[in-house]
Length: 156
Image (tube, rainbow, N blue to C red):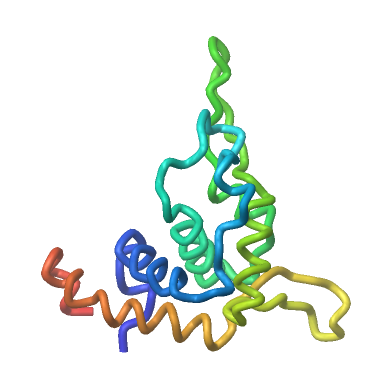
């Protein structure tokens, strides 16, 4: 069976974003039309479905890096900030966007908060079996297109 680790991220994210767009729990808030995705950006996103694409990317990152928190995800979605004549520096992405997406994914039962054994320390978010199943199903669906694009992947 194909897992989400076996297909390229770009193709997987596009497939997962269409599945997430069909869910009613994953929806773009009203304020999301006017915000930048990080301090390193000059303008808000121009894509109409950028919220679903970012949600799919966050879901994939939680699957690959779990348990992971909002801070580490913000660093993953950050970039270099143009400081004029000074050298560029790395800046984190918007934590509010990532936190809201994670809350929506928790509401959809695709992500859950992981704690240590006694349940006192929050370690970060991890995938639920439903989230793992969604990612693997989409990976299995897009695999023929990936193999047609890159025939070397057929041996995996």
